[in-house]
Image (cartoon, rainbow, N blue to C red):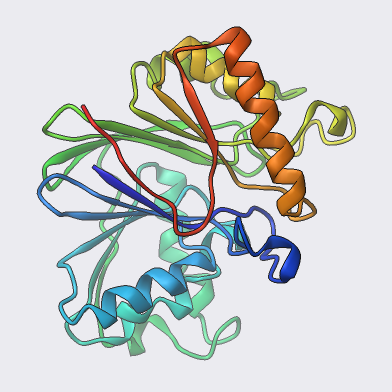
Length: 283
């Protein structure tokens, strides 16, 4: 599989000179499976860049499979600016992997005429919103599964396993050690991510951010690295960066993560996700 990061920020977009290297767009990750099916995880502001690239290529993939973790603004705000939905040849499927997601997708709040002037019925593209049909589905050559995450209001994480044996886990907006209301324990997440080639995980906080940010629904870098080690992930991509961290602060997190791995998980590689980064995930 080929994975490209189009948005890596959490909470709010952060344009400006201090975030230019890692990027300021909110979360959006594109995955191309071995049969070239396009899967999109989240449609934050980074989705605008992805959509423009798809339209500029001249031939839109059919369909584009979209999986949204949850409906907080930073994960959906790019939807009205996703260029394929304004093309007659566009075909987008919004998949619901839980009853909560099905209800959220059905509301279509961004296209209600109040939050954005264009309504869903006015979009030229073919937009499908199939009902919830289980926590596992086939998408092209791959199988997608979901797991419930620890985040206020509810959230899903996803794992995609391709026909060649490659796999990617996308677990963002997840607090590994929440003060209350544990939905999925670290042991559950370890099993879900077991042996994955690439674990993309929310790592918004550092230990010094606690305890002030406990219960906010995001994880500490060290806890994410420990999850990757326990799951025997080959690579961990730290994701959903705090909007107040500039490029220099993310450089320090990258160095911290490398040092942690040298001591605790020498077989695992780690990186700080950045816009435009493309990774080929091998079986």
